Amino acid sequence: MGVSGAGKSEIARALAESTGWTMAEGDEFHPAANVEKMRSGQPLDDEDRWPWLHSIADWIGKQEQAGLSSVVTCSALKRSYRELLRDGHPSVRFCQLDASAATLQARVEGRRDHYMPGALLHSQLRTLQSLEADEPGGRVSTEGDVPQVLRRVLQLLAEGKAAILVVGLLFVLSLNVIL
Image (cartoon, rainbow, N blue to C red):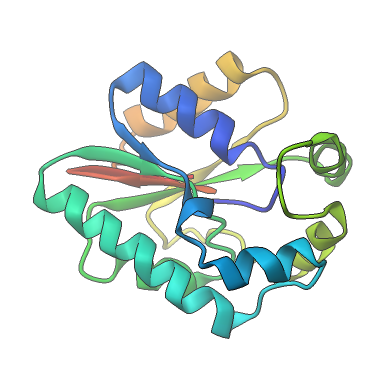
């Protein structure tokens, strides 16, 4: 889990390749209206996000039913969003990906193939409720190269703090991770 530019997609792909887990890109669950709203520079609100989050939660449920360890990217900016993603899915663990504001801005501005403009990063940073100690999972810095960050995520998993990640990442376990 994490804001735009945190490295969710890149780290989730690396994790899926490293582990053989199923991976889903959370952005693909957005309805067209959400994509257009972001493309036009308007931040999403809760009314926009709830249907999107329910779609991701449905995907998590299917992964669990199939007994598949998985990772899905999702900003999961608020605790209430994370609670929805975990509701009925106790194997879900969150991995909040962190980076400095300067790093995030540089990454977002450097993207060429994404619909979300860099100006919306500030809205996400204001909305972000960081993962708390009583929530399942942990936090990982994405400062550094992909292999370094992947090692940190795998260490988090080895410590038992993430069985399923939602990435800033979401791991869906059987093992589930949200990035």
